[in-house]
Length: 262
Image 1 (cartoon, rainbow, N blue to C red):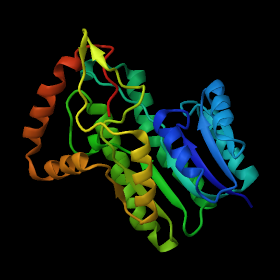
Image 2 (cartoon, rainbow, N blue to C red; image 1 turned 180 degrees about the horizontal axis):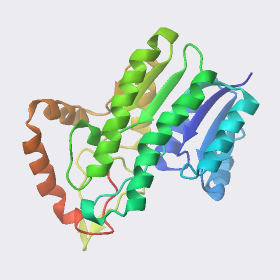
Image 3 (cartoon, rainbow, N blue to C red; image 1 turned 30 degrees about the vertical axis):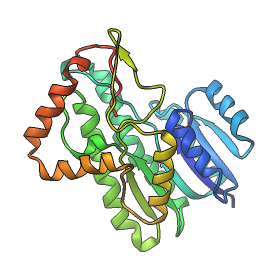
């Protein structure tokens, strides 16, 4: 039985950072799950033969069923499960189509929940689950309302999983980063540079998340800046924090091609 790590959203900036961390672990294979075959091919070429490409569009139920069939066929010993795939967009709620809402809820909430369920029979004592939530999960946030709500669900579910699974020696960590320095972020608007307070590298987020998971923490918060955000979300009335956030991002949110949410 091979020891395996399963990483969804493997070809993105944060996915690659987690891949670098996983390469340092004693694993036989790292299953890199993503939908773009060309990006998967490039990923394998860059990181070596230990990386096993698993082409799967998580928005297509038949392809998710194919992933489940792969688990049944290979019966791996899953040591790490990292649910990194996600969807996000900043904008007024009335600009979201029904299809976009459905896909965001499915990818951010339903799928990580199901993948955890599918993977658990192949996980033993010492296994780690990391679900990538967000600092946006700490409170309601205007103009990223859908993103915040879905990540709040994932954060809550992950922490509950941690409690239930501890008797089995399996940990579950909700990873809650702020702005991450990846190519996803639009860097300017109308000729003006956009400032992202507390932005951090994907490598730092992944490194901290892996350390926290190994310590058995139910939540990983990277950088002092985001820890302060977490503290303020507990101390400040949410109406105040929503007003501050809404005022700060309204000018970006009104742009239909604006920022992906953190």
